Amino acid sequence: MKELLLKQNYHWTEKPFNTGVKREICSRIVSSMQTRHIKAITGVRRCGKSYLFRQIIQYLIKKNTPAGNILQINFEDPFFISHRDTPDIIEKLFKEYCILKNPQGKIYLFLDEIQNISGWQFWVRSLYDSNEEAGIFITGSNSDMLSADLATHLTGRVIPFEVFPFSYREYFSGMERNGLYIPEDRNAEELHQKLFGNKNELIHNLEKIFRTGLFPETVFLDDEELIMNILLQYFQGIIFKDIIPRFEVRNTKIIEELAYYMATNFTSLFSYRKIAESLGTDGNTIKEYISMLEKSYLFFAADYYEYSLQKQFRRNRKPYIIDCGMRSAVSFTFSDDTGKLAENSIFMALRRKYERVYYWQDDRTHKEIDFIIKDKNRLIAINSSYTDTIPAREFDAFTAFRQYARTDRNIIISRDTFIKQKAGDIEIEVIPFWVFAFMEI
Image 1 (cartoon, one colour):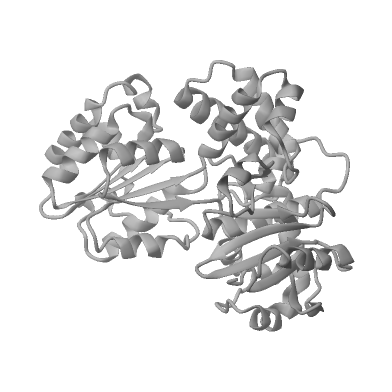
Image 2: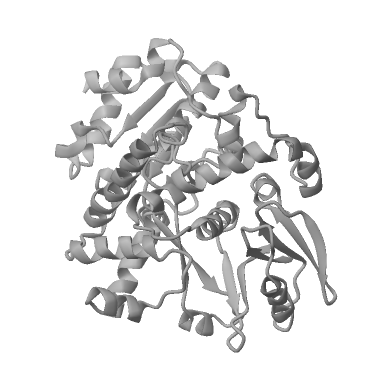
C-alpha cells in the first residue's frame, strides 16, 4: 500500500507536476472550499477530472498547504481490481497515509473514480462526520451513482459539479502559444469586432473540432486516425467499464447496438418503440438502456418544450452525443454531416451551463426551434443553421413559436453571417458559430 500511495501522490516529491490546460470550473470549485461540504465532481470517462484534481492540488500548495496534508487516491489503478468489494480498503489506505505522513491540521482527500469501490459512501460519511479538519473531493463517471448514493447517505453534505471535455475557450487557451488569443469579452458584438481578423483561423479550428472533438488527451493531436482510434476506445470503455458493470446489464449486445444507433442518428427525433423495432427488443428495455447511456454522460437528450409534463413525456426526444469526435469515431457517414455536428456542438455548449435544454416543433407545419433554454426569468430560442445563406424557414420558426410562448431573445447560429433581422415584430440575431463559441447568452 505504501508503494501505491507514493506512486499516486506525485506532489509529495515537491517537484513540479503537469496540471494541463486550466479548466474554467476550477475557480468555482476553489470558491466552494469556503464550506466543508464534500465536493462531488462527475463527468464522462477521460474528460479531465484527474487533471482538475491536479489543478486544485497545485492551488492548495501555492496557498502554503503542506504537500503531506494532501492525499490522492485513484481507484482506477489496477491495484483495486481485486478490492472492488472491499470497502475497508479505503480505511486501510488512509491509516497507511497517516503513518507515512503524520499530517497535522487541515487535510485534503482527493478520491478519484471512487464508485469503483462498493460501499464507499459509508466511509466518506464517517470521515466527514468525525473529522472537521478534512476537506473531501470525490469524482465519478456516472451521474446516477453519485446522485443516488449521495442523496441516500450524504444529504446536505455535498456540493455537486459537472465536468465535460474542453470548452472552446479552454481549447484555444491551450493554443495561445500559436498566437491565437481569445479576449475575455462575452458580448457578441464586441467578440465579433475583436475576433474578426482571425475568423478564418477560428473557423478552420472549429470545423476541425467538429470532426475530432474536445477530449483533453486527443484535442491537440495532429494524427486524425490516431484520434479516432483513441476515441473509439473511450466509447467502448464507457459501455463495457462504466455502464454494463454498474447497472449489471445482461443483454450487452443490445446496449452496445443501441449506443451505436444513437451515435449514428444523433440530432434526429427518436421514439423508444421505433428503436426497439430496429434492434429487436421491447420499448421498456430501450427506455431503460437510454437512461443508462445518459447517466454515463455518453448521450444527452433534449425534451419537447411543453408546459404540461404529462404531454412532454409523450413526445419524442432528440439525442446528442457528449463529443463530436467520438461520433466521428464510431459512425459510418456517407454525406457531409457538418450541419449536424454544428448542432451537436451548440447543444453541448448550452448543456455545460443549463441542466435542461428543450426543443419545439409545430405539429402542423413542422417548423422547429432547435433549442429552448430558461435562463432565470428569460426564455431564449436558438436555431442552428450552419451556412452563410440562412433559409427562410429558420426565421419563420420563431414566428410560429411566438404563437405558443413569448421569448426574450432569438438567435440563429450561422457559419459566418452576423446580422439582426426582423420576422414580424420579433428581432432575430444571426451570430456566427465562431462568435457563439465564446459568448454569454
